[in-house]
Structure formats: structure tokens, C-alpha cells
Length: 71
Image (tube, rainbow, N blue to C red):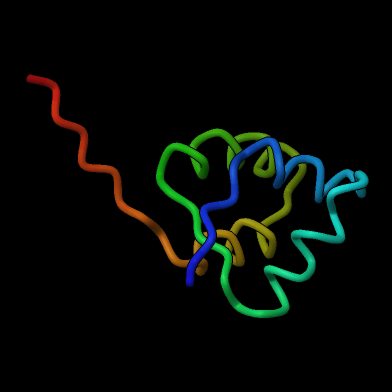
């Protein structure tokens, strides 16, 4: 089962925060997922830090595509 990993969890993981171990387990099992909004929040900061490899890895995760209904 895929797990949608929120932006705040990715940020904490990248900073080595206390919940990083939990995301490590999700990554090891191959279950992480993201969406376009989460990528839009993460990628600009990673581009500023020239983290091309990390951006590529994030984009390779399963993506739950957003399909908003505005009506």
C-alpha cells in the first residue's frame, strides 16, 4: 500500500528530525508516494540548493495525481 508523505514529513526527514526513522522504513519498503502539490512545495527549495539527484528521486516516487473539482 502506498503512503502519501506530506511536505512537512519530507522536510523533517531531510533535516534529520525525529520522524526520519519512520520515513526511512517507508522508503525501504518502497511505499512512499507524493503528489504535484507536495512536489511544488519541495522542488523550488531543492533547486536553490542544487539538489538535482534528490529532485529526480522525488519525481520517481509514485505520484497521486490531483484531480480537483472546482464546481
